[in-house]
Image (cartoon, rainbow, N blue to C red; front, side):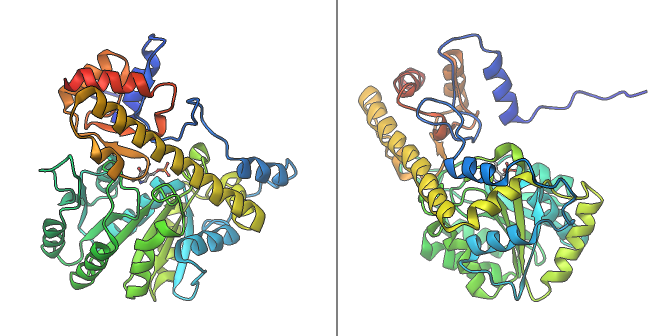
Length: 389
Ligand code: PLP
């Protein structure tokens, strides 16, 4: 018979459950990293709707190859690297970003990597995925936490932590739109990070979950990936199309392996995939492939990602303005940060006070700005103002 202790819930989904159970008609969710429009509703991008119409109902439901749809993978490579550098890059379709990270971490654990490092703080699932893949997990310094009102990368300690990682360790770097801090390294800082990874011979995993959301331009958001590409280092990129295509439930992603040995690496990942879920799902990659493969739909997509990113930027300005008015303090960090998330600097106690008034954010004080709109902004800021006041 089964006899198990209770398993702790995932904090992001636990927060969502608390939110759903709250009967308050004025409750607001700023927890989960999913885009909402200015009326608070989930969005289906118009390019996605058009792609679905083009795909229609006549599509075959045959298995995809274990490695996924070759055309989708080629278009995904082009989006990451600028053109499809297929000569030393091989790819495998993945179950969105999470599935790609799992394949990458499991592969690294199979080839003798012992330990993986992610930023402090980072997306909570990095730790669970690493442990699940059989790796030890630790963190490297990321943000200068002494000055949250003017957030910046603590590059000195970041580089020094990279320097002291044992040879053969792996490091997860977020390509853009860092979750949860909203702070990305500058171009010069990326150069130093690339150099340090080379020096320490680290296995690099670029977690690319927000391409387009950080700057509003998918091209500009691939800067860090292109720097690694031109460095000549071996590395992995895990792409998610959940956020930037609004395809959260479709689980569409890709892992690109950059290495002279990339074909063998992908073949080993195919073995892991075969023994885990066998083949990737098809509908999501059909949609992304249809959009990226059409000049017109790709243009629509670039515009729509830009609009989502711009709406979030506008909300940041309004939150800052309103909070500075109500609290009298500086909230400059809210507009300095980029991407979907804002690390507000609220303590756990202040977060709990907000929850008592039915405004939900993560215990770390991370707000998903994508959940803020013209209709709920006043109330969010009033509640935060009271919590910090
Ligand atoms: N990486 C980061 C930093 C994330 O924040 C997320 C999702 O929130 C993911 C990866 C993976 O998302 P998905 O598996 O939905 O593509």
